[in-house]
Length: 182
Image (cartoon, rainbow, N blue to C red; front, side, top):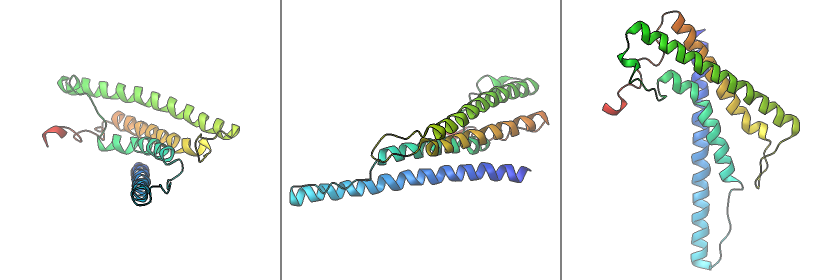
């Protein structure tokens, strides 16, 4: 089971990386097209007008997908910002209780967000909602990676809660600490 869960978290992180790569490719191509247009203006006095239709919309969609798909992977890697000013001064048993309470609260919030994002995806599909812009995209396609990323985060938080109840350390313990001193 551990291997399957870790695979899901890594796959979600990998998908996030693909979306970031997609953003980079789209923006790089648009920069080259803008450069060609500027060169054409310089030599002919008139631009060619090359552009990727709705490229700003697509990069925004990709950024949302990447951000939410990376949540579970980042949680497990210890990359989320954690304020440990108070908890680091607590005795180990009290710190453990605080960690469990924090994970329970995060799990509840994540499950709530997942549920309503799933409903939004279904509603967008049912009503045929489309994005605005030169290229109209069905919104359920854009919203699905966000819902999936939230679902994987919810799974990761439930996984953490089970581990904490079993007496195991949190997956992020010792990771990401003292990043500024490295």
